[in-house]
Length: 518
Image (tube, rainbow, N blue to C red; front, side, top):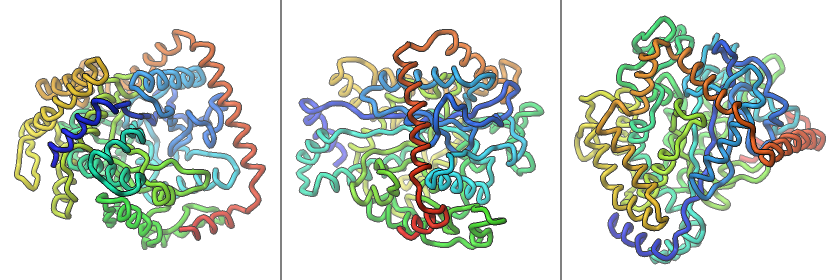
């Protein structure tokens, strides 16, 4: 079945291939010149975080999120991402943009300001949701940054692919089914991305103050995992005890949205004890396992663009899956925009093969193996003796990685033949080099760079941040790009003001209606 899908794709793409649609959401902390998390409000020159289409915040007021539009090529995407970064660096004053996934110096939860979105009901909802994350998990976990990669294929592809497979469903249902086909294989192989792109093997000591851990000390202010690839994705990073009780099913759209909806309606005892208000102020949206769908953390999400005040589950159920969002990527601290061309091209190749390879449903036994492989690579991916265990048996991690990369060679050659260049073969070659020379893995490069510099995590990342900012500020932003961003910033501030003026319901009534619609 896997080979037949590859062959069908080869036949289809020979005459009907228009490439991928892609975008990036890149997070990064604003940090002062001493390497401490910024305590200042979001720069007004960057517009409204509620309504700006390119520049917003994630959890913290200090945690910028920079969003590209949907692009047709890696070159277009990176050009846009560079422009956004260039504009942001112009308006940071004495602050810098932190290049690493694990945060700068912190002083406990109180040092991490929660993002503000104004006085509109939707703005207050976003803030209260973040208050809920604070009381549930603490703010420190939410100060971590990453890059999300969004990928889709155009309707013209799906129409031809449906015809090639002889499928008789509606295009909406067929497309959703095929995206979940891709997602299942992604879950089988996501450990590979943590090996190839994990870049957070060390962290600042302030992140684990008063926390038990098994890390090693590099210097008085730095801890590291000897063989770790991504502390961000390990037990010290994103984790959620309540969510461990969930059994979110990624086999098909209907079960995925149904299990998520159940978590939105199911109370969790610890959250019920907290209550929804404290001293008359809202501290969380609800006492359910999840306040909103996005609270559920997974390495990949099937997504659909939402309309105003529409919930993600509603959008998926109404119009099906539109794209997938890869969420497990650490920031590349050596790149001034956190990602590289070779990385994005490889992700295209990797995700397309997830669609084309055979993808049976994942049962409970396989699910447990997949989770174990992922955790092992996150915590011990660079260990020479690491064995990955699957339903088919055990295999050394580098051998398992090489087998996955080798199977991508024909597809890389095919895509390069369609585009008339060598970008996919080059992207694959970069990853193969990491396996041949494990010192080239990003996590190993970070450790080597820190050690060579004689600096700990905080000072090394701060030096990277200052150097990257100096490079952006050394040249002017093209006048038309500058004008476009200035216009977006002004219009976003006007848009936020209009939202605030148009609200007619008190917030508690608005929240009551929001929850009643579940």
